[in-house]
Each structure stands twice: as C-alpha cells, then as structure tokens.
Length: 106
Image 1 (cartoon, rainbow, N blue to C red):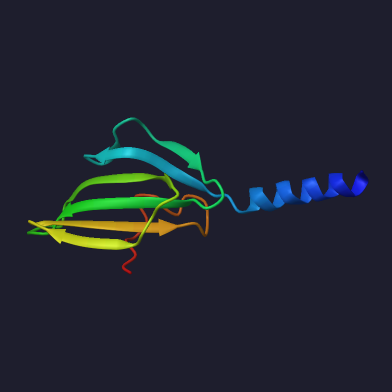
Image 2 (image 1 turned 90 degrees about the vertical axis):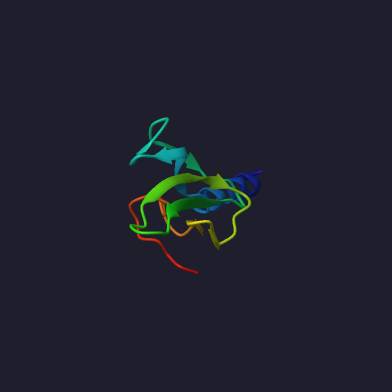
C-alpha cells in the first residue's frame, strides 16, 4: 500500500512538472486583450500558442492576436492580401506565448 501511495505521488508530481502557464487572450486588439488578461494551464499533450496577424504593407502594424492553451498547434506563417499570419507554439517555460516576446521565425 505504501508503494502504491509513493507511485501515485510520483505520477502527480511528474504530471505537474510537465504543465506550463500560458497567456489566455482570445482576442487581442488595439494593444490590449479585449476581455482582460487571463491565464490557462496546459494539460498533458497541450502547448501554449500565439497567433499574430499584422499588416505587411507599410508599417507592419499588429492587427490582432490570439493567445491560448491548445492541443493542436503548428508553427506556421501565411501571407495573404497584405496580411501576415504567424503562429508560434511553445511549452518550454511559463508564459512563453506572451505578446511582448519577440516573434520567433520557424
């Protein structure tokens, strides 16, 4: 019984160590999160994600962003009609998807 308890505690600690805190902001516009800044905690198999959209003509002005925990994330960069959409996934440290961190090109 004691060994079973130790195993359960070990597994609980192991799972907790694999989670990270992410910024949660479904809609970032005009320099702020529309619904206020929140956080989410990844579950096993999830990562933090940030998807930025900006105008690519003239000033590269940030149009919008989405930040969240997700189980489906793929590094991606798309160009369409004067917009660039860049998706970045991370799980190496808490809040690695913060809006003020530099864009990491893949």
